[in-house]
Amino acid sequence: MIGGLGFGGPAGQVALLHRELVERRRWLGEEEFLAAMRLCMLLPGPEAQQLATYAGWRRGGIPGGLLAGTLFVLPGAALVTALAWAHAAGESLPLVAAAFAGTRPAVVALVALAAWRIGRKSLTSPGALAIAAAALAALAGGLPFPLVVVVAGAVGAAMPFPDYARGGLHAAATLAADSSDGIRGTSTVRQAVMIAAAAIGVWCAAYAVVWLAQAAGGRGRDIATLFTETTLMSLGGAYAVVPWALEESVTRGWLEPDERFDALAMGEATPGPLILVVTFIGFLAGWRTGPGQSLSGGLEGAAIATLFAFIPSFAMVLPLAPFVSRIRPGSWLARAMTGIGAAVVAAILLLAFGLARAAWLPEGVPAALPIIVTIVSGIALVRGWASTPLVVIAAAVIGMVVHLLGAR
Image (cartoon, rainbow, N blue to C red; front, side, top):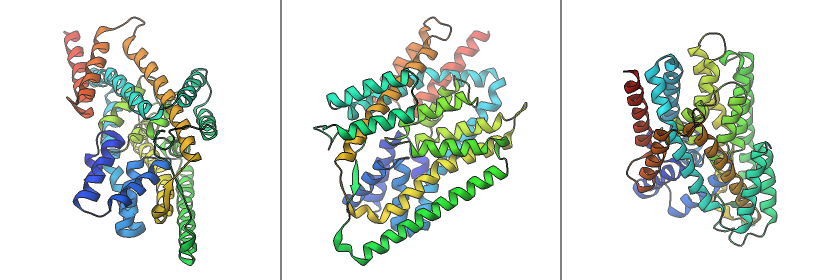
């Protein structure tokens, strides 16, 4: 249920989880929920899905965690796959193309608001502002995003942010060993190592199958590799790495530049984690593996992208779940997360600028209607007049109406 209703990004999904798990069903206490949330915010990957995985583990052990985490993702993944097929199959249908084109100005508003939301929490000190400015210059100059993130984290860890306890993109935490646990603590560590080893084994086996089967028209191995890296690099939430994943996909020829809008629109307007953008990319990568169009290749690509984007989350949450009770607020790690958060804001700003230029200047000159749609979409979202899916759908309808009027 939560996976199918999880609109509104991580904040909305976490709020929904809190209402269901703490307030209604009382599966978790308030303190345990907050401790689990801190752990999931610390880890790379989609924190809401990881929190659902923890809740499933708490109720039903490892099978419960696997079931809860999987079902949290499936509704959104299925919907994104269906929309990706509609997008790919409808490329030759002007009305479908117009609907997707119509969403692009709204996507500019969505990305700009994400930059504002995250920036307001991340850039809380002069040091964070300086890191963001340096990261923006580095990314605009062509330095790779992973390198910028690593450097920003290292610089952040070394800087004495006065507000690290409340600043940063996430409330960071560290695992502090409790010497009173004795033998039980050793057993828990051994179990965690075994679970992590099993997860790595599953990843290797799945990767071998994809490689040997030449899945997704031979692109399966590259899809699996890229989106495993995407999850492992997503410290600071999905927006930390989605811009990089989109650019990599364009560079590899899996997406056209304008399809970055479509991927983000689907990720924002569908339930589940934003990182399901990778499902859309994987479908198109498999669809376009030859001179024709391959539905089977598209479905394989979507499944591979989704699977390998979420295996790392399970591999991290399930081994660490028993340690949630030992989570304590961090210090150097919190400062590192502040630095990474500043770099994330820079990456989102750069993405917003590129998308705005493409949407507002389609032929090199300002287009009035896209600018108006962006402004109205932003106001509607900020004021709470409409939800994200409704804004995206309204923009698609505007695109279709404009096309029909122009065709007369």
